[in-house]
Image (tube, rainbow, N blue to C red; front, side):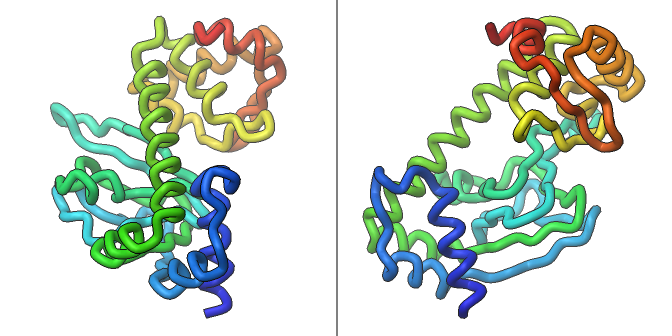
Length: 224
């Protein structure tokens, strides 16, 4: 229960600004009572496209890729990290999950039974408001994802992905993952990254990209 309480308190922080609807100890305890921990090794499937959303998942650690196959080619829709939520929008809309979710690295997932989450949000308006804020933030992120996909050429697309996914100036994605996100070959993405590095905008490292000039990179992406 102590571990569940820590997880629940962490979830409360990630759901959105506390000043919107401060959660009390009873709210956190109610969440803690419903949490389940699941560990997924790299390559393991969290859920498959077409499944009913019987549980809502929250990424506690690790990385989860959302993807689906279109015309024989796997398309990466989104890459989720610590604090991201899976399955709640499908639950609220009563629709099957529209993509596969696969762990890219060893991941810890917290989950809540769908029916229990419904009841929890009905009974606790402050928690429901915070969850609404979380959903709204993720919908906005999907709009930015559309912008990434529709950005000019490949250089603009790669630059947009880097700017949007940087954490403290570093993007923790392999070149293969970057290639999947923009729907291009890894060799083509590597060529673009080498060009950005030659311009002094980024520095390439194993499994990550460090942004050296965010303003200039944003201009390349068409975000400024």
